[in-house]
Image 1: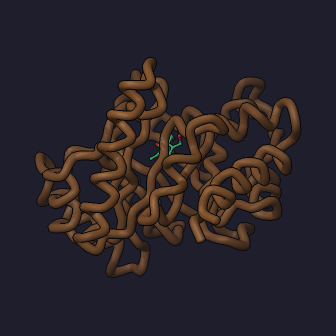
Image 2 (image 1 turned 30 degrees about the vertical axis):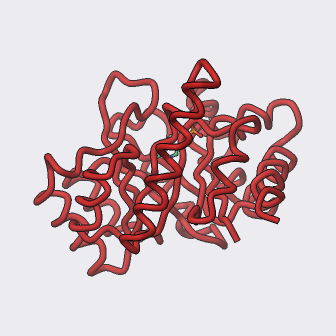
Image 3 (image 1 turned 60 degrees about the vertical axis):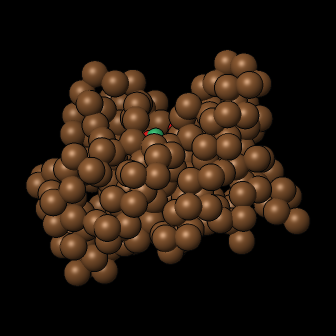
Amino acid sequence: MIRLGVNIDHIATIRNARNEAFPSVVEAGLTAETYGADLITVHLREDRRHIKDDDVFLLRQTLKTQLNLEMAATQEMLDIALDVRPDFVCLVPEKRQELTTEGGLDVIKNFDYISNIIKTLHENKIWVSIFIDPNSEQITAARDANAYAIEIHTGKYAEAKTNYNSTEEFYKIKDMAEFADSLELVVNAGHGLNYHNVKPIAQLPQMHELNIGFAIIAQSVFEGLPNAVSKMKRLMIDERT
Ligand code: PXP
């Protein structure tokens, strides 16, 4: 069954806005798990703008499902990952000024460096996915670098302003999900997915997991995190049956 990774970064955004200890990231993670999350995803950014180091360690100790740590491919983050020991690491590109992750990682350009990070993490039984644009050369490079999974960047699909563009972006994702599956990569996807656009992506038979953050946390303002999570999970699963 397709898995839902709930990204709880923006619980920390709210907390940090007032320098308070609440809302609690740990409580959010545990609540999301109770209501349908199969794993919890957090992005520890270089500038620590939302999730902080302590959050990651506390989540590791308290979560009952699995922890997916999104991080830049840097020595600092590698050291933290080896300390925290999340179940998964998702390697993402990071730019200081961006509002959110803007594009996939360029595996081809940084091949040796990324391969070495993957090797170290895999030796420590932390399975690595690479956040990647729906592009066959990049996906082939991810396989050659020995990634366990790819997470297809769905941002362009989610942001498409016309039906034509959205369909075009959807077919790129569909084709690349099939291609990655043929290379025996586990296929995940995420970014910009919401209650309106998730169904076609969840329906792709190769899709193993979707990581969704902003839409769920935003919806929780109106109907609470339990409903926001379970509603997303239902939409994803209903499409499969
Ligand atoms: N997957 C990755 C790799 C991301 O960087 C993000 C954003 O942090 C997400 C998924 C979740 O994106 P969104 O918050 O738009 O659902």
